[in-house]
Length: 466
Image 1 (cartoon, rainbow, N blue to C red):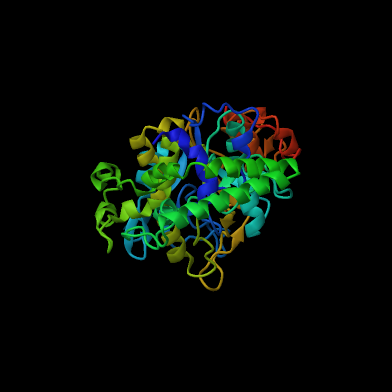
Image 2: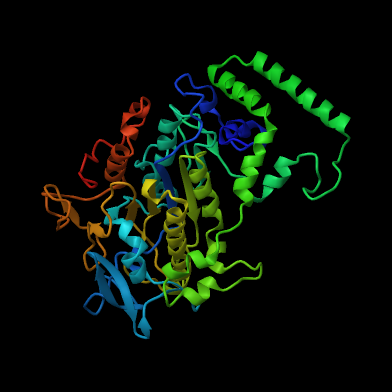
């Protein structure tokens, strides 16, 4: 099965909500796969605490300190990134309950070298929906398309990529520049054999004659819909659906992506944190090693990139809204999330796409500097953002927070330097600043539709990415 047949999948499987690429007058029908770059947005849903990962901080001085940390007792500088390293009981490891899952210091000494860390980003909100929107599209007040959708839309103008935008995150607005595709996961065998009650059955639910009759009636209905469509957008959608319905055989390729064997844990073993290796490589009830299972959803995204049938994707994990029992619950969420970032970077290297892959890591906002009465931490507008990808100089941090976890400003003349928040020679980083730079690096600012989606005028261009 040729990869180009993937273009006909959408209507057969219901993968896509819109299909603008299938009838684009600008797209070359012979260019139906994409060789990169690729864009993946990973979101920590609920509001993470970056002081547990990339903006380590100790309890401030004073009887009522501006910042409290009952867990971390030492912070290590890793390439200018303040990383929590010790507790009163020894080495700081991110744990799921008591099980060691990730080592932040080891992360930034290895796969994390690819990431540029932005500390002290002001989301300008403590509302979940607004924060999620802002970090995804760069604007808190206007629901712009997500950066992932803009990038996919830009690529889809010249390439007939069948599933340009895989939408699995919390914010997936497209502005109608591209269709949002949702991968059906374990439903692929049923989609590939729609007349079977179970993919492993010996006989279909209906006879061959009935199958042919059903397909013929479906085609007649599509032709009728095609003839009655009047609005340009409806015409594009119906025409794409008709084209897609003509080749159910292309499902074989989708099935091969979804059902390909999981990677062997031995290929990751040398790159896992030594203190966490035993837990991550242990087999679970299903027989798969824990690290392989943790990366299952992201594996599908990466394989779609490698197959050339997708250009961008969003993905999210929840569990970060830790208003109670913060030190335990936030650790659990962070441990699994960071381990999945590690999986993405290692697996992308194995698939040969790491040097073409942009990875954006965000959260709604941060957590408050002090604990509440339930040992939780509440919503805080200051957070951290991570970015890796071609041309991104990683292994360092831009921006800082002060001892009370308040944002400092980056100097206008040199973003590697920070100044006090009341210094007019500096700029407080917002999501809009980051998105303006990322649009430039991803060439999205060259798309003919980008003028419809302006970022906040107050978030001027800052050379955060060189």
